[in-house]
Image (cartoon, rainbow, N blue to C red; front, side, top):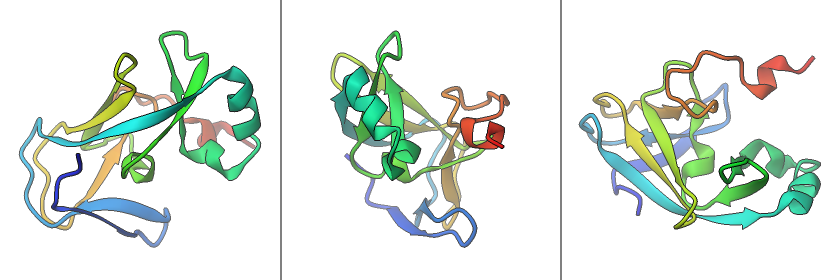
Length: 128
């Protein structure tokens, strides 16, 4: 399920991102997407490809990874994100939910650390 008001466009600086044509209320589920779960051996292989930038660690022990379908892998990172994500390991889905009201034309972002307000540097900022 993806809300009809969501769309993807180029952000200029961060590649593609997810945006909305409508105002969205706080605590609205805007997407629920199935995921393709891969085991540890697959994760080692995927980590050597461009898909590394689009996968999520998966499972209670984070010993697997997944590729999310839908728009989930296109949401850009922000330390002051306006959405958060929830992983359902039983149903193999990821849900995106707003943490505040979103305005038309605004980009929807998630915090790649998992918690929407976690300020710890993400992996691509610690490289180099």
